[in-house]
Image (cartoon, rainbow, N blue to C red; front, side):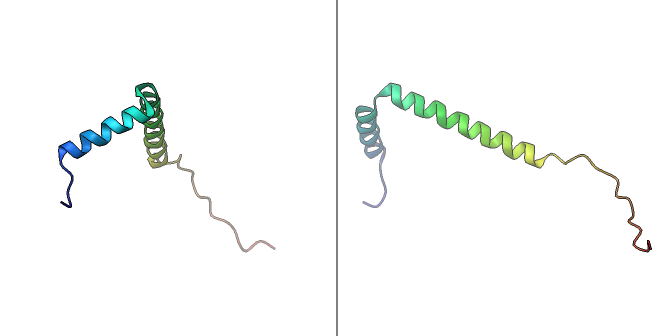
Length: 63
């Protein structure tokens, strides 16, 4: 009783399709897919190492 069978999920799917319609679900899926793609691209861009710059020693003994 605690787990859902395939029939429960099919009934939920039919109700969702009846409420939202197939066009609205298609646009929601498209928007969600582009959001996930953008998120993955952002993560990938964040992982690329930045251009290495040479650290020049700072002379702290200046008068």
